[in-house]
Structures are given as structure tokens and as C-alpha cells.
Image (cartoon, one colour):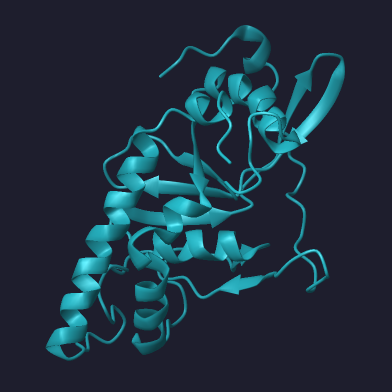
Length: 215
């Protein structure tokens, strides 16, 4: 893990609360996702973020995730700026949490404002020892993953009250019921697909996406 500089060690993340998600507006679709892996309501501000939450819910390697998890305050030249990652995830095999940012690769280019913002905050995250990765819309749509997840989540029993000790990768962890054999096989297959997706994303250096035009 990178060593934290003295300056950054003295400048801990702000206690400022992440921005609250308000009602649906004309700027995009907003809502909550019924997750078994999030103690608080898993909130999304776009359809792409909702797609990412589906994939994280399906990935067995992801044990817990939190949306809009924390606000980082940092210096960008002479300006004080704030940055809130989309999601923070805890992975069973990792020693630390991982922050994810979701972007639409139809508009996310090396010269876009969002790319410039990530490029500015990335050194600060790394100096604190945080792992950070970018998730693209095309990642989430590959191999009809979203269609498979949406179908299975419609059939899957509704979640009960959040409990940190359940195995959220099971079909019905609260009651132990099983679906028909074909649905169970589809569930096992899509879980592997979600984990494979996450592994590909975490092997990808975000600098590579920030240095080239992705559109």
C-alpha cells in the first residue's frame, strides 16, 4: 500500500456528509436499489449506476457496498475541491476497500470535464492508499449481463431487513428456498459472469482510460 505523505496524513477526509439524492428530476433517473449487501438504501442517480449496482449484487466476491460513501476534499492547484465516488465495495479477497466510478463511454473522453476531474483527484486517492477503478457503460452491457440480471432479480425472493451475516450470494438467504433447477443454473452462471466482470475492471489501470479517447 502506498505510503501516506505527512501533508495528506494531516488532511483527513472531510466529515462533510455526501450529497443527498433528491426526487426524480429532468436531469436523470434516480432511485434506490433493494440490495442485500448495503446496510443503507443503495442509491443511484442514473441508469448506468443502477446497472452497476445489479452487477455488484450478483458478484459473490463483493460482500458489502455503499453508495455515495464519503467526500474527499483535496487541492487542485489553488482551488479546494470535493469528490464523492459512486460506490465503495468490500471484496472478500482484498485487504482494503475499493472505490468505483461509473462513466458512459459514449461521452467519457480524455478531454471531457469528468475525465479531468478524475485525473485531478486520482493522485490524492492513491497517496492515501485507496484503490480506484472506472466502470464503463459498455462493461455493464457486455454479454447481455443486464438482461440476465433483471430477469433473475424479478424472480428472486424479496430481501428482508439487512443482516450483515447472511450469504447474499444465495438465491434466498433469509428463508433458504431454492428456485427450479434451470433458474438456479442461470443464477450460478450470472454470478460467475459478474465476478469475471469485476476482475476485468480491477485489472484495468484507470490511467489508461484517462489518457485515450474512449468514444
